[in-house]
Image (cartoon, rainbow, N blue to C red; front, side):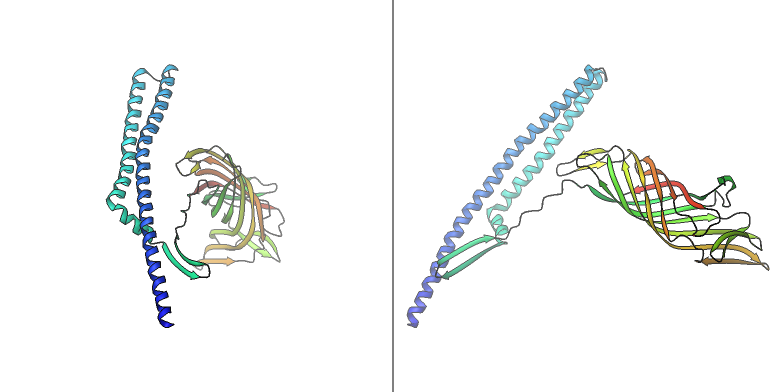
Length: 363
């Protein structure tokens, strides 16, 4: 019985190897035909390249002739443009053909065996014996390549801004403001996402993200802020002040509807909209929270220089919200923002922060 079993096993193994060798030869034949087919397609591609470039050249020459007929250019200029277009077409044919010839040479030089080994890296052979009979399977783990992304409707931008800062006070002109116009300023830094609203046009965009805002007031007339039981007022300092500055730090979420023309750039595998050197206008607002406040005083006391930093305790509005907008070209824009919330919770006279400066939106 054991002898019969061993003979049956030997017979099955021999049959398996014989069948595998037969299928291997068949696969080699298929792979060789596959390589020949690829080379044939590449040869045809060389012919198509020349036809494509000639068609493009013909179209360029047609446009040049139209400009000549419309007297936009002279005959000499038209001739020079045609020569330049022909030169570009010839170089395109040469370069693109060289790429195809390199692919053909790579297939021929490596040979069909090399191609087979590369394919075999991901192939597996399985042998099954059972009630269903004898079966040999050759399969591949090759996965389809991921296609390049053709369109991207949302992209990120770094946002920074700097400029002048002050407050609008009821019944008080900016010239009479208790804060210096030149010494008061603001800085903003953040990150936004820019989303194209409609599928086939980039004229309307939605911009949203986060920003840190630092608003500084340079207090004049030897005054400083005093907290009298929650009532924030300006009072004269008992000594001569060299500098008196008050700063708030906010974290806000800005949202703007941005609109303006864009230039569509189309490539072989994707297209993009470029706003480089294009007019843009943004209208919107922001909302967020106050992260802190600080008053910084510099003065002399008994001949000694004193720097006094007082953090918190100024009853600034915890919730910050306002309107903002900008207009510019490309990455640079004139920027204005205005806090709808009062600077302090309890004020005898309402004052709201306003900033005017330059804004930069960079990729």
